[in-house]
Image 1: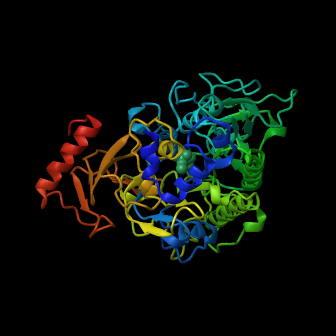
Image 2: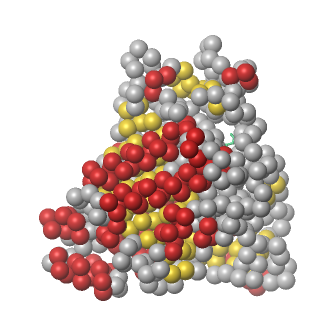
Image 3: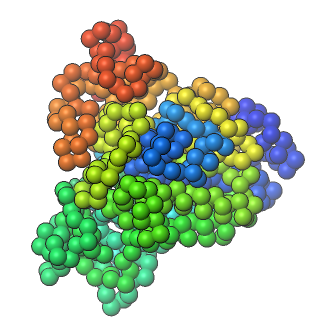
Length: 510
Ligand code: NG6
Ligand code: CA
């Protein structure tokens, strides 16, 4: 019942809607003409729990992200669905656990779309309520249905799963093709220089990171030794399309500009903007105006740059008079990593900064730092500043946003936590399965349980603890947020309960 949903939502908004003389979500001209709030999800890439000032960073300044948290809800216990990108993004848009979809793993730039075009997604759900949706930034959910011809309309992609507008990079900034696509077309492609992409073999005569170290301005550490563009060796091969290639150092400005234009274009109707920044994922290539800004080398500099982008985007909303009618959600797709494949001083210049904050692990890990990330909601005049310890997941955005706009759609694994996101309730999730590279673990109450997994305890390339162990790992996070004391032996009843819950949710026998 729409009315009930809104009654619990808070009197301020309710009265706004009553003045407008219509129910939110109602498909009439009045509700379309501005009373449904705009929704902006700002999503960074590999930014850790400790990579934000309000989450405890003292060596790195993020004043603009801090401002959102200080004026909104700062969640201390907010989760990405996975410790890597593709699965987290899949879960965010569909509200479905990523481990339920075999294909939801780190994708090459040539991978087909992994969201079925029949699947309900946040932008589709919002479209039913009269929203216009746009994605600007990193996609990494696959494109096309097999062999993509990059010189034609590339489809299906974001526009076929609900976005009315898309300006994306296909996969990651370290993967080919190093071009932007706008609504399925490679931007700036010239007819006489077609673009070819392969993840199998190089194109004859094309330089690579292995064969042509003299062409590199950034050296590869592991992986990342295929095609070279802009002096940076990538994962995957490509040929041609020269005029369309992005300039890494301009990427932040490029995405920001498109996102700002999107807001200006859509300001007269409810819109959903998914602003998926590329920072601080590798290769870390700050614009020259940010070089040296953090004193921490490129990784810190691109976080400062990303923070600036957040500030500029919010400024645009403000200038357009939209800030009081826009829910902003800020989060990151997975935890932090230092050396993720290039020599870029991330380790050497870290100093006292702790990207993982008080947590254990990082990107790729089943320990907390893999998935517990900065998570902030902000809505000027509607959300009271508060800090919330409620457990929330990016999975929950689907159903919670559906509540917000009066949609009856729900994501399969997505909980209705609108009141929590609005800072009006601290009754978050009771349990949550987290994922890292197809392995899963359980968060329940104040406990975390990682089942036994074979494989190295430390992911050597990136020097991050994986969460693999021959034993069950059980932690009481209230007393031990750093997951130092394994209680699986001393708390057998709790372990049993955790195993039962894990088995019930995942269907996996332990
Ligand atoms: C890994 C890459 C890493 C990064 C990651 C995806 C190697 C050795 N490592 O395979 O650099 O690109 O994939 O990151 O190639 S994510 O944030 O998009 O999940
Ligand atoms: Ca990521």
